[in-house]
Length: 119
Image (cartoon, rainbow, N blue to C red; front, side):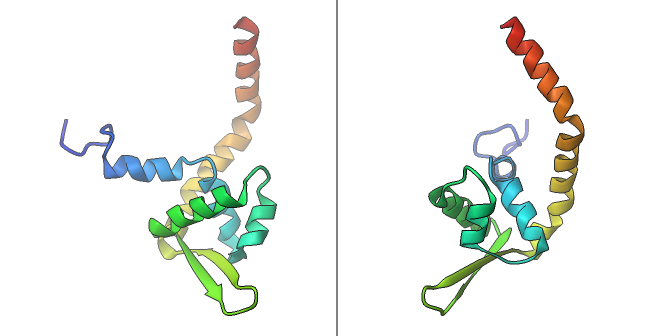
């Protein structure tokens, strides 16, 4: 296998998939498809997501060039997040993944129930 292939732990490809596959990335990015959203609004819209974890996820997405952070000089400071042009290129893929989940959720739940009953 080539050096740096996707199955190696330090592969850049794998790092990108790890980000996209993160528990919160799809939810955050799909909310941002309609335009900038303030941090506190994001935090309220995604149940079960602590402010600390949201902050970390947004920093990671910003570092990867998928999200921008804009701070406004207000008291207190207002911070908004938005998708970058690179982040927007990922939305079609995330929508397809979300559509697949919607179409197959009952089949997945049925499989989980069968598996759990046999365990």
